[in-house]
Image 1: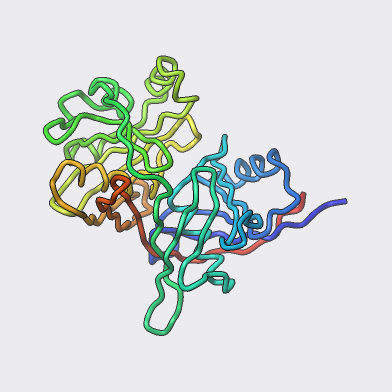
Image 2 (image 1 turned 45 degrees about the vertical axis):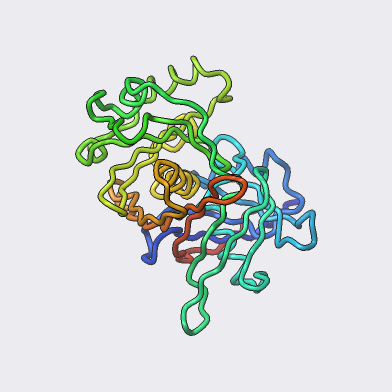
Length: 296
């Protein structure tokens, strides 16, 4: 006997339909197997698809599992925002906050409304404090991005492994280099082959800086995402990394991503110093797109 599961899709980190990062949300996934979740994520062929389950703690809104085209993820930014937006539209926000249980920890999403009370988007608080866990050679970054070593800037920092729940290599490049960067799968595969501790995940987040405004691009071809139009779980720790280079208490950045893909996105990334380290968040708007039913 077939089973029916409803889903919605959204464009996340944008105010315009057909911009931002696409997301599919299965709003009631009880009864699905792990294999079915992975198969559905591959079928949708989006950066990520989420599956909503009952929360283990009744004080929380829901438990959420996130799958990219090839594997489950512990945390991701635009899936957190889009899922919370969807649940808030169902009236499930408590005091303006949606609390999501994820493999990386509890993710709080503070819901944004306009003056009329209409839900617009929200701000995702990353589940873990910022961690910086080692440098990556400039030549390795350049090879993965199809650039030369001189395109990678190291005045502020070397390319680094950075995480607030989901690890990335973050590197600063020149503005022209960011525009012409292109992921080189063979170089990504070589990086993975020499780093077994990464368990097959090597995602590269590049940025170019102009004051408090940043442009960014993210490549994760080994996860099936040649390029991502908006990456909350990379831009949030990017804000934390930049704060760590200063003596400031907090920092805020306006980040543009997805332009080269024809899906422009705008993200608000923030970082602040706390007793347990630098905490980061990322926010933006969502646009509901489609509704449907999957038959399994």
